[in-house]
Image (tube, rainbow, N blue to C red; front, side, top):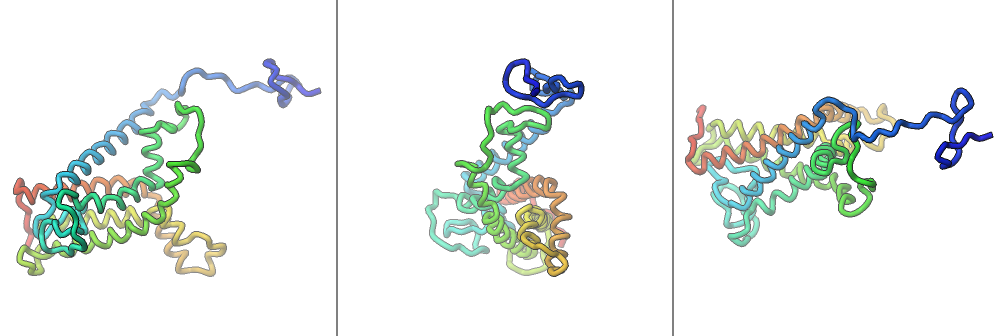
Length: 275
């Protein structure tokens, strides 16, 4: 005979002694964790909010982003003819009241917003879905990323391609930072190192991306027949293990690079020259 639950909800699997199997304990508390599990999502909220507020302010400020030979990564490539400086190509005539950063930030921000790591970060911190391991989320149901608006997370690969283009442009900017104000090569200042470090961290963040790992080695049934792709996949996999670190380091570096150019452009500080 099939054992029946005490609530009469239907058949249950018999326990070891032949009686009803024990049910999962009903725990009213949201979690039994005693550590400060809320600290990490709180710090994530604060860090991302600070970046959002700072980048939004700088984009709408639309000034102090060029100090020869440095340009802020928020404003590069400087697309409109109203851009500061004359070093970088201006591709079209845009209204003076529209910041060129508003055209540019769409792609890097799109890449980060759809990034697999950042999804985890802001799902847990802003949406509490879930806020931490072994902590129940407050939402009644979960539909995943199959419905609007989260279905647009699937365009992450295309933002990855756009991100590579911007990485190449920012690397070009870092190379141009070896020139002096007159255009002669051989200059190197602290700003040069700042732009170089930012470009390097952005490359590490992009190449450690989960999509990059799939693009390099995905859909292969036999690695032995594709030794070159396997080698690339191995390198990307090692980078992928540190994707979270590169994500935060590059987020900090791009904001700091903009802040450094801002400080030099406003004559708040002088660029430290090495030679």
